[in-house]
Amino acid sequence: MNFLVKHLKDAKKASGSNESITIRDYFKHAIISCKEGCLLVYAAFASFVHGIFPWWYGFELIQWQIDMLKRLKKGLPHLKVWEQIEFKDEEDK
Image (cartoon, rainbow, N blue to C red):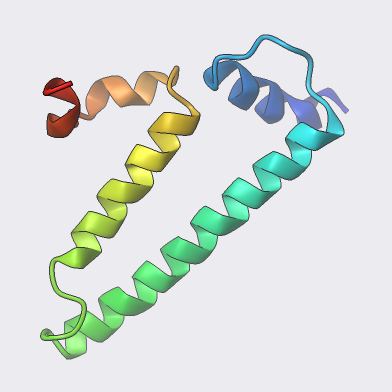
Protein backbone atom coordinates (compact mmCIF):
# COMPACT_ATOMS: atom_id res chain seq x y z
CA MET A 1 0.00 0.00 0.00
CA ASN A 2 2.97 2.32 0.55
CA PHE A 3 3.56 2.70 -3.19
CA LEU A 4 -0.05 3.91 -3.58
CA VAL A 5 0.40 6.83 -1.21
CA LYS A 6 4.02 7.74 -1.93
CA HIS A 7 3.11 10.15 -4.72
CA LEU A 8 0.40 11.76 -2.58
CA LYS A 9 2.91 12.25 0.24
CA ASP A 10 5.42 13.75 -2.18
CA ALA A 11 2.77 16.06 -3.65
CA LYS A 12 1.64 17.21 -0.22
CA LYS A 13 5.24 17.92 0.77
CA ALA A 14 5.76 19.84 -2.48
CA SER A 15 2.74 21.98 -1.64
CA GLY A 16 4.47 23.02 1.57
CA SER A 17 2.56 20.83 4.02
CA ASN A 18 4.09 18.27 6.37
CA GLU A 19 0.76 16.93 7.62
CA SER A 20 -0.21 13.31 7.06
CA ILE A 21 -2.31 12.54 4.01
CA THR A 22 -6.05 11.97 4.21
CA ILE A 23 -8.73 10.76 1.82
CA ARG A 24 -9.47 14.43 1.15
CA ASP A 25 -5.94 14.81 -0.27
CA TYR A 26 -6.61 11.91 -2.63
CA PHE A 27 -9.75 13.58 -4.00
CA LYS A 28 -8.06 16.97 -4.22
CA HIS A 29 -5.23 15.37 -6.22
CA ALA A 30 -7.75 13.59 -8.45
CA ILE A 31 -9.67 16.80 -9.17
CA ILE A 32 -6.55 18.82 -9.98
CA SER A 33 -5.11 16.02 -12.15
CA CYS A 34 -8.35 15.50 -14.07
CA LYS A 35 -8.80 19.24 -14.61
CA GLU A 36 -5.27 19.68 -15.94
CA GLY A 37 -5.62 16.52 -18.02
CA CYS A 38 -8.80 17.83 -19.66
CA LEU A 39 -7.08 21.13 -20.41
CA LEU A 40 -4.16 19.26 -21.98
CA VAL A 41 -6.52 17.16 -24.13
CA TYR A 42 -8.26 20.34 -25.29
CA ALA A 43 -4.90 22.00 -26.00
CA ALA A 44 -3.81 18.93 -28.00
CA PHE A 45 -7.03 19.06 -30.03
CA ALA A 46 -6.58 22.81 -30.60
CA SER A 47 -2.99 22.20 -31.72
CA PHE A 48 -4.13 19.70 -34.36
CA VAL A 49 -6.79 22.14 -35.56
CA HIS A 50 -4.22 24.93 -35.64
CA GLY A 51 -1.88 22.73 -37.69
CA ILE A 52 -4.53 22.39 -40.39
CA PHE A 53 -6.15 25.81 -40.01
CA PRO A 54 -3.38 28.18 -38.85
CA TRP A 55 -5.75 31.10 -38.32
CA TRP A 56 -7.55 29.24 -35.50
CA TYR A 57 -5.96 28.98 -32.05
CA GLY A 58 -2.97 31.22 -32.70
CA PHE A 59 -0.32 31.99 -30.13
CA GLU A 60 -2.82 31.58 -27.29
CA LEU A 61 -1.86 27.89 -27.32
CA ILE A 62 1.50 28.89 -25.86
CA GLN A 63 -0.20 31.09 -23.28
CA TRP A 64 -2.40 28.16 -22.20
CA GLN A 65 0.72 26.12 -21.43
CA ILE A 66 2.32 28.99 -19.52
CA ASP A 67 -0.87 29.50 -17.51
CA MET A 68 -0.99 25.79 -16.67
CA LEU A 69 2.60 25.85 -15.41
CA LYS A 70 1.86 28.92 -13.29
CA ARG A 71 -1.19 27.21 -11.75
CA LEU A 72 0.85 24.13 -10.94
CA LYS A 73 3.68 26.21 -9.49
CA LYS A 74 1.23 28.04 -7.26
CA GLY A 75 -0.13 24.74 -5.94
CA LEU A 76 3.22 22.96 -5.70
CA PRO A 77 5.77 25.71 -5.05
CA HIS A 78 8.47 23.48 -3.55
CA LEU A 79 9.20 21.27 -6.57
CA LYS A 80 12.78 21.28 -7.84
CA VAL A 81 11.56 21.47 -11.46
CA TRP A 82 10.69 25.15 -10.98
CA GLU A 83 14.41 25.92 -10.82
CA GLN A 84 14.53 25.10 -14.55
CA ILE A 85 11.80 27.57 -15.51
CA GLU A 86 12.10 31.33 -15.32
CA PHE A 87 8.82 33.23 -15.05
CA LYS A 88 9.60 36.80 -16.12
CA ASP A 89 6.51 38.35 -14.51
CA GLU A 90 7.49 36.95 -11.10
CA GLU A 91 10.78 38.87 -11.17
CA ASP A 92 8.88 42.17 -11.08
CA LYS A 93 7.19 41.33 -7.78
